[in-house]
Length: 275
Image (cartoon, rainbow, N blue to C red; front, top):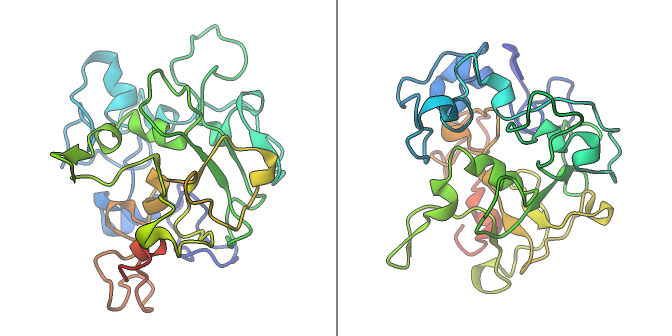
């Protein structure tokens, strides 16, 4: 994650390939808009208040350390990750509490005297190379859960983890029945513009309800139950594109500003009639 070297993007199997969550490399190269600002790695993003994350609510006191910023000494990487022990990188192994939660994305609300992994966290399956060479049948598997959320990380959804800071992107998506923000943890309809969305695309991952070992690197989309996720459009650590997007949204339909290849319209992977 903390690496100043150039990376291959998207991932095509080189040893220099960026992994699933992206890299904060692009924060150093392109600026604050290209990744999370994490204490010990990058400075505070001065565009935003340290008491309110983008798409979040104003926080105060110790809540700021977990729900508003990752750029102070009390948050940093452990504002999201609670390391315990590595699970075996077995592509059929569903990683939950027993294995320290998916990518250590566990509850940071644990007591200092707590033994073992946190009681709540994110559920998923890790592909053995962490998507260094992601394909439609070789990729991480993420759990999602349609809202509303009622408790802290009770769903195992990676979207609920993101909503801890950026909650408006989950629960404030509608105004007078009109979309004002793209929803997270929303089921992909089995109708209309989505009916041609059949094959899993690792550049635009979707989340799956109640992940089991049979969901490891699934290659076919289950419309009507699979969900759009925060990470369907964003890299968690950073990307070559503004807002940590996975593709050159602003460049389409011209040339991609990073790869100098024809730009990819990642939106049309799901919204198949809008390309």
